[in-house]
Amino acid sequence: MLDTLRQTFTDNWIAWAYQYGLGGLFFWATLWVGVRAGTVDLRTRHGKRFVAALIVGLLLFAGAHFWWISVVQGPPGAIPQAEVVRLTAENDARARH
Image 1 (cartoon, rainbow, N blue to C red):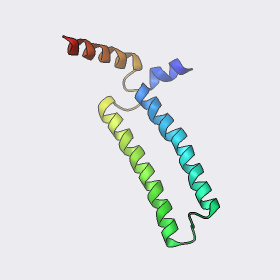
Image 2 (cartoon, rainbow, N blue to C red; image 1 turned 45 degrees about the vertical axis):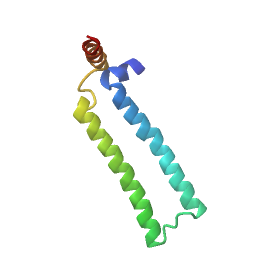
Image 3 (cartoon, rainbow, N blue to C red; image 1 turned 30 degrees about the vertical axis):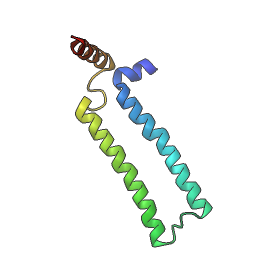
C-alpha cells in the first residue's frame, strides 16, 4: 500500500498529509482540552477571537505550505516519486562535477 501511495504522492506530499493530519488531530485535541478546562472561554468575545485566530492561522499555514510544495513540485500526483529520485540523483551528480 505504501508503494501505491508513493507512486501517486511524493514524499513531500506524504509528509504534508502526515504533518497536518496528525498535527491537526493534536491541534483539535489541545483546543478541546483548553475549552473543557476553562482556559479558553468561548462565551467571551476574546475567547472566540482567540480560537478563530488559531484556526485561521493553522489553515493559512497549511495552505501556504500546500502552495509552496505545489509551486516547487506540482500538485499531488503530478510527478511520481521515481521521477523525483531520478532528478535528485541527476542534480547531485551535476553538483559533484
